[in-house]
Amino acid sequence: MEAPVPSLASTGYHQPVMIRESVDALCIRPSGTYVDVTFGGGGHSREILRRLGPEGRLYAFDQDLDAQVNIPDGEERLTFVQSNFRYLANWMRYYGEEGIDGLIADLGVSSHHFDDETRGFSFRFDAPLDMRMNGRGGMTAADVLHRYDEVQIERVLRLYGEVRNARRMAAAIVRRRAESPIARVGDLLQVLKPFVPAAHEKKELARIFQALRIEVNHELDALPEMLNAACKLLRPDGRLVVLTYHSLEDRIVKNFLRSGNSEGEIEKDFFGRFTAPLTAVGKALSPSAAEQAENPRSRSAKLRIGKKNATEANTANKTH
Image (cartoon, rainbow, N blue to C red; front, side, top):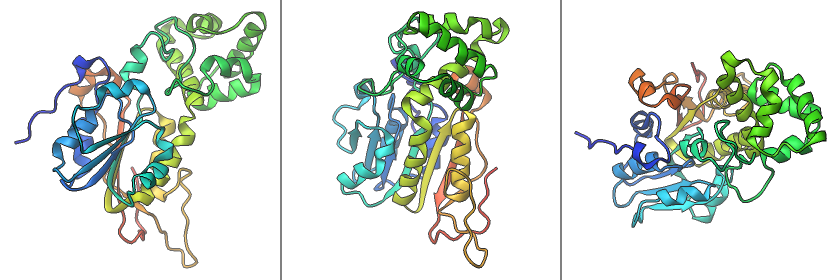
């Protein structure tokens, strides 16, 4: 009987979603090499380490300096990489790893980020409009709102947040910034108030803040890069395990498992045969009712699993 997985609820950083199901899906070999590209609170990494033997190896990625406080003390099997996961291939090459046995990605934003009153990820706190995961460079959400033209702002809101009133909101943002800066969460909420029905306020604001966060951190650009690198690194029968939290990223993962590319384009050879590097393992999984009740932020999660094909020849690879 396996030992219980320690709860991270008391750490205040992040409560991992579907931890048992996702780590089970890796089919861990005690001497294998694994990658957790979204270390965060370290919950998935600690469970992987619990199942690894002395010769096993785990690489854990996180671009946020705050995540380093969660690195287990004295754990020689773990190498922490402070970097965006889009650079997975470069770092594996740096460490001399030619292949891996499994990779897990929990694409959700850590509870730590939503609950940190200083980072600007949540509309609950009047913080500076930052939203950068790494906090060390690049544009902030405030920069996006001030540097982008009206068409670009509308594109961000519509594409990444599926916001219905994107055009009117973009116009209002441009009008407001001509009068005074939109530098804080409270400034943005004031602009958005006429366009957000009180009955759906939380849902609509969540979509808008999601859109800005995705743009600031280039999340939907980094994801295909990581998936491509992971696919090339995985050994035959190696596992790719991905937790998604909104339809945009889930579509990319679903397409990748189906076709080997984020667009979902089926590439056939001269004879009409379909070659794909991965096979989807089962259907997408959702958290149990009990987990959703305990952790409401898990409700939108989907778990998708892929297995590296030994020959990369598969004519019946389908996702559900």
